[in-house]
Image (cartoon, rainbow, N blue to C red; front, side, top):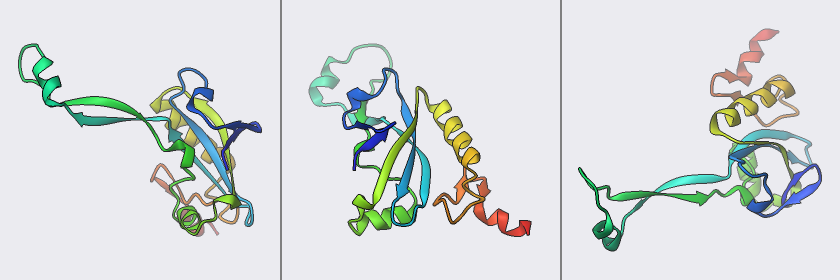
Length: 150
């Protein structure tokens, strides 16, 4: 199952709006109806060792860098979420049981975290354990905190 954005299928990184850093998504497990809300970046920066030829070409003062930063496309096409239960279902070969939807495109790292947090609170993911896989927000607010509210 590919990503959907308002029922439009996203299969290529070129389909994202220009300047998109990442996106907020909703993954729904169809048999149970449970949902996971998360964020995903489109690119990762990797440190790559310079080749001998590249080292010889490097000029400048001071210490020479032994590495270069290379931007690489993330695993967004095959990503379903970081939640343990979802990972287990995917490992069991149940990818076809999920619907993956993009809620919002975001153009920088800081706002990606902001909007993920906004959506998590908007949906009340910690308050409805039967509806959502999410069990914490920012590693600061946990589902178990709501057990003491009764």
